[in-house]
Image 1 (cartoon, rainbow, N blue to C red):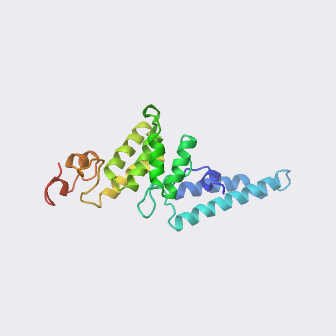
Image 2: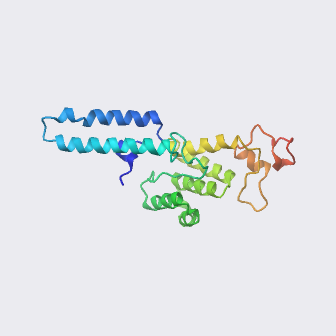
Image 3: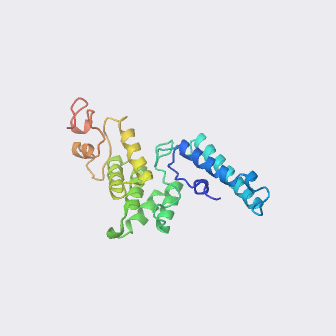
Length: 211
């Protein structure tokens, strides 16, 4: 099935208002009345059907919680959600996104680790952050998202994931896992911006601030 977001020419992270605007623009462009006496009438009619179907598909997805506008890399269950289309057009990253959406984070991580360090672009860090979300390693995920955003500051998918994780972290008082075997530390939490104004058990107790 054709990606409905591609049909409308918008990113999966577009807001509902942006999607509605894109739909209206295309509806005006391909409205059958404009081509009534033209040889392009049939083509415009088919294109209009495709645009309508794409718009309805996106609305249904969002109403059913499959994707929420402007929230980036998360679904309603809190797991990672990478869009199906690679920002860089790299087939490897398309495959990794597919694996993440299927829940096969182990294979996704294996493919990511095969990428040479010198070739690890912003999308690599974003997708690795999605893998870390799957593993409940939120501090590590935040670091990868931060790196992705610093490398590609204008990418809305990366920025939405970064902000979503920071917002989500506000509901927790600590306990984020890191890649180390000894659990998390106060410094890890602070550097991940996950408990800037809270009291953290990682530092010795519920009433001791982490900074």
